[in-house]
Image (cartoon, rainbow, N blue to C red; front, side):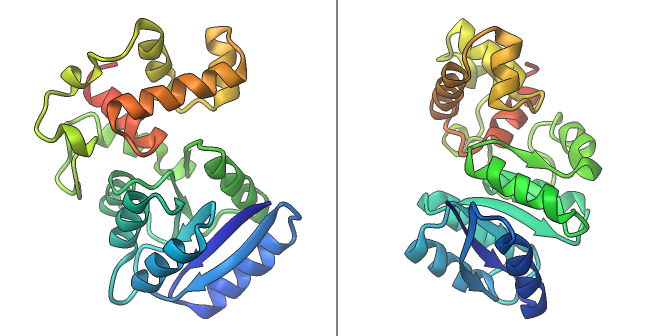
Length: 223
């Protein structure tokens, strides 16, 4: 069972999301939050597998809440919003979100995205994928909320990769292409379990909290 926390300032949206997700037996909504501060408190208390986070909320906004939740290690975050705005996309991913979807997403793709994020994969709305990768090709971007990774603030992106083995560099390169663990396994002719282990090691060595952050760092470093 994958547990989910809903964070949105509109009760009708939360009700709709709960109804959509409850149709899937492997997904369980364990809590709701109408603002960022409550979302952080709920994530800390409930430790859901995935938090569906809106961007614009009263008080503590969704980006700040995402950063706090990810930093605390309490939940993975999938941003679900109405706004296809570069600033929000960049801010969400740099805050540590594992994905960014628009509220126009269908019920089936949303449920699948929750499963993928819970499994440690990255999910981006097709509408924003290309612009995100292009935008992060330049180091940082004007709207970055914090460096990627945080431990390497101010460092040359290429210098952050020196601890990676040759195989881990190959894994990072395919992470940057947005491949899933299964696709990485196929691309490198290894088992899916081995691919998952390599991905975890790459994220740990780079100090990244998500595959998206690792992909951004790879692009900045020219991988």
